[in-house]
Image (cartoon, rainbow, N blue to C red; front, side, top):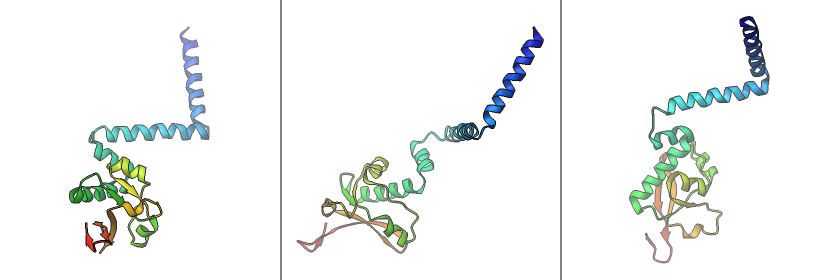
Length: 147
C-alpha cells in the first residue's frame, strides 16, 4: 500500500514538472511568480500613492506633479490643456501624456488635448522652461490680461 502511494506521488510530481516545462505553461507559471514577488514587495508599502507610483511609473508621478501645481494655483475644478506627446519628446522629457480619462483617474483633474474642440475652454496649460514642467494660466485675448 505504501509502495503504491509512493509510486503515485512520483508520477504526480513528474506530470506536474512536465506541465510546467511546456513553453506556454512555463510563461504562465512565471507570471504567477512575478505576481507573488510584486505582492510581497508591495504589501510592506500600504500607501496608495507609493503603490501607484511604483505601478504606473513616471507617467503617474509627473501627472501628479502637474496636478499638484495646478491645485496650488487654482484648485481642482479646472480644465487643463495638455500638449501632445511630440511636445514632451521634443523637450526631452520622458513622459507619455495619458489620455484625459486616465489623467483624471490619476489626479482628479480634467484635461483636454489641443486637437479637442473644447481646447479653447481651458484656462490652464502645461509648458516647459529650462527643463521644468510648468503649469501656467492661459492669456485672455479679450482683456489682454492673465486669468
